[in-house]
Length: 514
Ligand code: URP
Ligand code: ZN
Ligand code: ZN
Image (cartoon, rainbow, N blue to C red; front, side):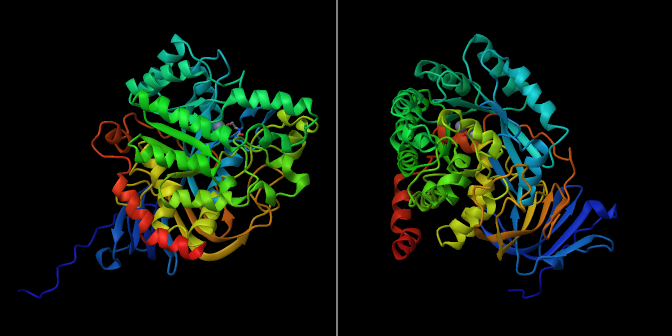
């Protein structure tokens, strides 16, 4: 057997403007499926090389970053934002500039925002409006979901145009917001059927809007009109009932379903159960619910923490939701970033139904998931990457362009310091809002560098974004990650695999920690 060393193939690097070229050395690459030591070379926004330093020659003048002791991870993808959304009599104060600047500061290099048409508004017109708001302002790449806020033949036709011509593969339905966005079951079935026909992805905000309306009437009549009325009107089982119904409706139409913004244990368990029964369902939970319970928010501040589904009162919920991510009952974390200032929230003083819904999260999501997941011993770094980036890229069919450190992928990269800490505050955040739901929390996991398509946009706390640098990223239909499940090529989560997880090291670790 020959023992001569393998000849090293050197990758030639062409001299170009140094601004376009970055070399990151000595870091630990973490993808969702493995982590390993390697260097990364970037040219013109694309990853050109991943491997040992012995296999690449770097010319002078390239910006070199020493990532010794740091992790090189795919930039976060936040699949759930509402920048500058007109909602509840106000407009969300994080517009596409401030919102994406905050995203980048926290290590998120792509957002997927929701076009929410008004009732009887054309979806295409609403889509054009969102593009005209976002394109000149976005500091990182973005995609769009479109809300199906009403149902008609013209809406059905426009879904086809959005899928085939306008780069949208995902459509959000609402089982709540009666009189505004809510669809009934019959319409939901038609919508799901249409989405399936187009090989798209159905999304749902799952809360029972009829029960909420009834409870609200009763609570107001009883004189309960403060922010505590919000969760009282929509307790956990009101969320869980809708989650279960949505899973069944979508399953009957053979449509893949993304359940967005889950905030309670019972709902997460229902998604997990549906997945184990072979349903093609994915569940997202939110930074706010992973980071906070309402019981930890001072009474006088609760009005600022109102969002839907609600941040739950129970102090157990954040950890339970994190475990659901660890067990793969849930697959993603979003932020539902929809920020209002205190003066806007005050519109609902004396009537909780008038509090504009929404909180921050796009900036702090990555650190919070690290702190409450990895630092707490519930997630490993690969799972962290899966739930903050890769799973969103796969479900919305932009993988491996996004969500992976690999040759040919976009250079959306975070150089992550797992040991550094920072304390979250409204005084230092990059949002436009005057309140931060995580105020005062110290979190491990800090971005040393954030690269958006190769451009260094944040460097050791200095955020230097470029307004309009971000691009619209089309999300093509028929994501294989999703449709291979629907078409029976793979199971979403075979029962044996789940049992193994329950009995395996993760479960053991939980038992030790509990
Ligand atoms: O409460 C929230 N998150 N407001 C935005 C609309 C929604 O439900 O996504
Ligand atoms: Zn929602
Ligand atoms: Zn939302």
